[in-house]
Image 1 (cartoon, one colour):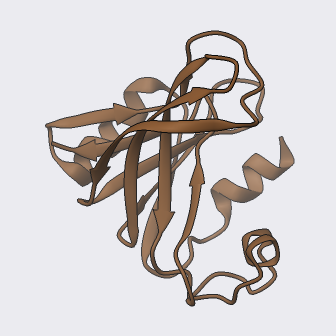
Image 2 (cartoon, rainbow, N blue to C red):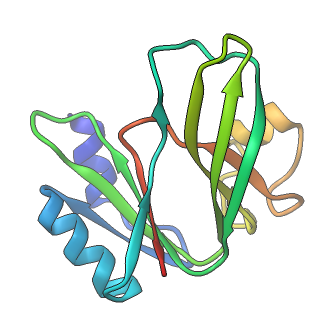
Length: 149
């Protein structure tokens, strides 16, 4: 819970703003104030419980407009850490696992990582430096990407 409080109180990195939503209504109000009234929500949803270690992509839709990303946090009640990001591309990805499990996944590519901490785990895992390449990842279940329509 301390991490959630720290995250919500710490200033956002250059190039964006953040908001900690404590209800679905707060999340929607913040999102529509940034993106306008016509928005869609993308999230990761599994057809059934699965450990999808290997999968193939069977569909892809790209959203290149402004997005708001809301991450579920660990707290005594629902708190979502939301931030708008100008240097991202959002994707709705349809995947099928080797076990046949189907999933709709939300993915994000951060196109400008030049202001990120050089010690960020993504740079270590990818063996790259800040600002050199986009950093992409799937979002876990219970996280939401809001895109303008």
